[in-house]
Length: 430
Ligand code: FCB
Figure 1: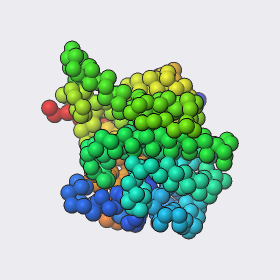
Figure 2: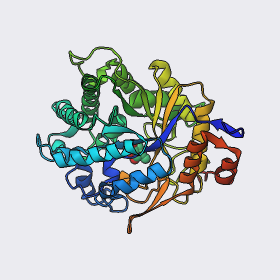
Figure 3: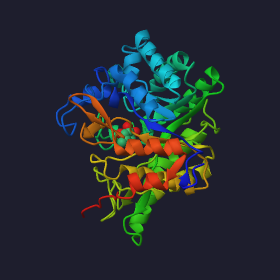
Figure 4: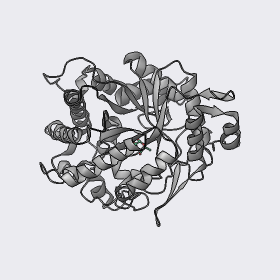
């Protein structure tokens, strides 16, 4: 071990995370494409049809990951490509994904594949999407096809990405397709996603006894905006329970809550996870049911608070209730100037290294700048910069920083001085 390590990351596999709709481009058969066609939905009027053209440039992207020495890659498969019409499987699309995961392995990276990351076929949306009672069954059929096709190269799976964000965006805040506001639909979605996750967990283990299966839980810190204000304290606790804790207990442990309706007969309390998948970005300052930030807090380009200690806070809490190795399935920041991303990575990795918790993996969100849902092409989350016009990729300093950390097994003083020392977060102007 280099003697001048400020801290070691040797216990971690480090890589990047992406999702199909945000990078692939070209697909016009999914709910987010349809949503983006509606005027006023996407901040800059863009759509996922351009994105990073990864569908065609995956070889180049895989080579670049290998060049940076990344150890693992989290990606998702696009359901609408694999099953363009109900029951009709596109073998060519499956082959394309097979080639990619084979190449990822060949390049020395461990693939982690997400089976649902916000996007699905327009026909599935037409059935009512995840609010429909048939949703788990339709999803399970996809899972079986994908695991059979990719299982030679992939043993690590994320069933569903951020059920809580998906359900509230789609059916509470009107910020994602179909953009309605209907509490019953939120509950139905979470119910069906929980059932789907638990059944997928069992199905994948039947097909692949050694598989590692979990879901990517969006967890954040909820803190009262004013500590002395009893309403703020109550809302913090309620938000946290409603948005993340009750769902985690149901999905991970089959501990049912009346919010999800009647418990199906085949679902009993148990253990439906092999790792804890955690997507962590920020902290909310709570004064009611919606989000806020603390005045003057360090923030990213989208105004999200940068709060590295929170990663360990949420992980500790989840791990206490559901002990397992922790995989940070996403963590990253919008920083177009790459002015503080290296510090962001440094601070979060340092928090991990200093904790007593069994962190095993860290996936930085994201690799190449990608299509950020309603925020369009504007936010820059990548360790690799993208010129959308030419599709040219340019590794940012933060990408070089991450490469050094992996190569050295931690952060050396020299690497810190070169990449991190001069950086600071902007603060919230309010
Ligand atoms: C997460 C999503 C991911 C990306 C990041 C910034 O909530 O899972 O697709 O949009 O936020």
